[in-house]
Length: 315
Image (cartoon, rainbow, N blue to C red; front, side):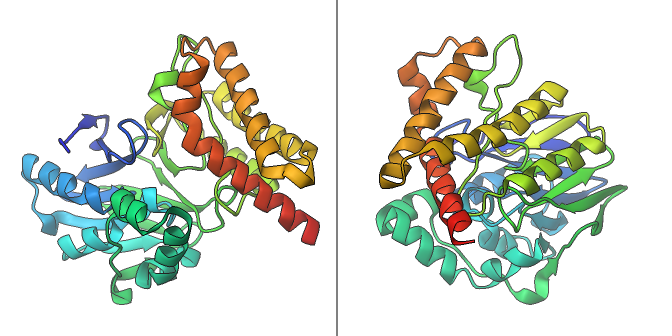
């Protein structure tokens, strides 16, 4: 893999992580007066690229002060153990509900291996290394850290996952949002702007909490959102409104599915839904291209909505 990155603003760099395909996932480096933080990590395969970038910028591994995954899903946090091993002065900033999975990743490894198979797991994620709990800060709501001359505030932001943090950077007036402010793949961008896609995966979809989270993020009047999927977008009310609408539409699609064939019907409903939205957005992509680019996400969203329905029925 060849190092690919984009310099943004205010000391922030977006790094291609090469998860599954280019322009699917990124992570971020923030630098301020010689101190460095990484927000999300990519997978273990990403870490050599991150080390290369530091060297290119003339920064030593000892300059890294924080490693800050938004949540522990492996496209966001799979490289955490390797990064902590490579950066001797770094502290891991993580949601309290996610910390145990970084300290003892055996449960994540077992779960992902069961879903993907051992060979695919290694191909996509490599090896998960544990993190010394003495180097971990469990960052709850409103926890603040300083990096050089800037302050970063942690927000507890459920909806996609109960252990999800978003990080508010006052200097750039931007949020690092993980999956909370959706996905915006560059291939779908048109004159209408970025194309919103809500990732309801994998098993902790919470519609009411997600609506509240989106409102909280927008209450800060952010100028930009640093998405993991993919790169930074300028904030618009229309993008936020589309995510709110998708939460409600997902619920409707899920509830309309026949319980006897639920996953398949939800998947088909989501596929038709986003084919229509892509056309309405002015995307020139063919139906096959839309399906190809969204296939991973549509499958995971259908799975997540099926699990949500099962949970609703139990309650």
